[in-house]
Length: 65
Image (cartoon, rainbow, N blue to C red; front, top):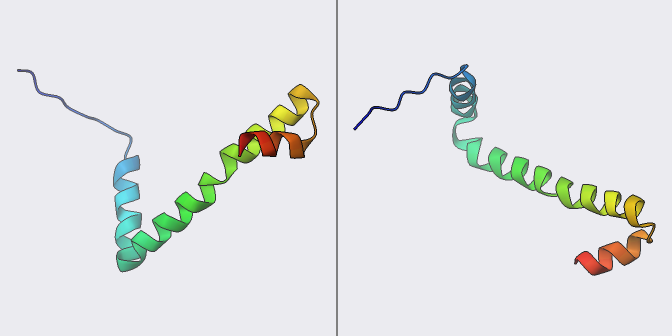
């Protein structure tokens, strides 16, 4: 069996240190960040479909919901 080695650019270490600074507030901060980012992709899809199809936004939203 061969060994797997990972050499990164320090991004994971930086993320870990930022979480350590948050301490007990880390779960709350991560939850808020995920909720904030989770809204963006559907918004972009609806916006692009409206442009591409020429349909009204309300029709796209009703069909995607």
